[in-house]
Length: 471
Ligand SMILES: [Zn+2]
Image 1: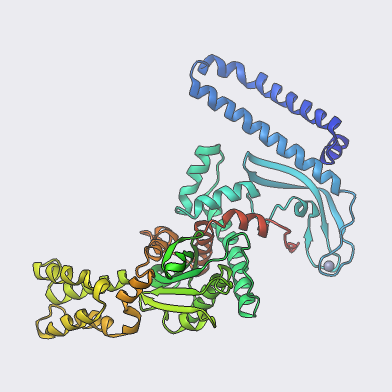
Image 2 (image 1 turned 120 degrees about the vertical axis):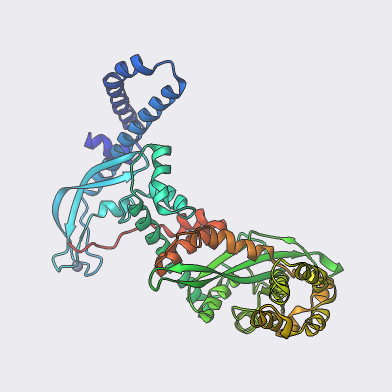
């Protein structure tokens, strides 16, 4: 059998048939053992028939994977690995050290040779590296599925999905550990890219995409509850959107050229802008064709200062705009503070000026605000804060001009990003996060929503060579 397995892993057709024969025997064995009793009980029901076949296929899968892995391990038994730390030959301490994993077809177990370094640098199994097993209890295929589920729902809801799909029992705590670990790996890769861009490696990473003519960048934030201090903290979300312009008629935006690319950061404002810059560069900020950079924000998050600093490129036009949705929110919040929330004067006043912003800019709003006496305000402090919003940063609210230029003035994309990338998972009710855990899941969600999930999984081999474990 060992010889057959060795040949199998080298792709020999003759021994492939032996492999198939051995599988056929296993299936027949299982069939004879279990079918007669089952058939008497359940035979006519199609759901039961499908369930039985499913179980059969799972057992076959389990046997096939074990067979295949054993063959591959057999190939490595004659090798003489050296220590990755000191390069001295390793000593084999067991030829048959058992390994257990939970995989796509259920519990798996096999044995492989285990080696240690005489100089105390740890011990490991080279066969595990060849399989790209990774250190986790789940096999890569199961981990891939589990993590994709876990970024969309609480960790403890994932076992029921795996149980129902594949009849494999797992526990929520393992789901959390595996997801956060892989997320931290994704975040480390992101940090490497941020450092590379900051150090001057500024080529566009994704060469598959056409160069954009304009790149819209927008930033917003949402609150996430952290375990460490039992408090809510703002987490920032950024989006880069490659745009096509409408050609010779003017700089109007014709459409979105490629999927929006999202990033999320728990770090300080200044650090977040380095992350945002790295993403913008990778999405074509500095591409020769890209000459217009509409930058949209809510007036917070340093969009005017750090934003301009990080995204200013000589020869390109940066248009720094305050998002009109946020402006409207402040308008309605002012009306509520001034006239009383939900009252008739509140609705009348806010409705009157709601569309004024886009058509006539901030001037008429400032006049209207000046006419409202703070003495009459229901909540003078709040009214003052929201009124202040309009007198600040007026140069970034020339909405009629932006409209003439065809620039985006309200970013549904960033509002949507905050909701879908961050809030739905991280701000959901009852969610309490550690900082590394939140960043890990947020980074994975950003990759997923940016349609980079599969490329990331393949390119980074998160399940690649494992570090030596301390024996
Ligand atoms: Zn060593």
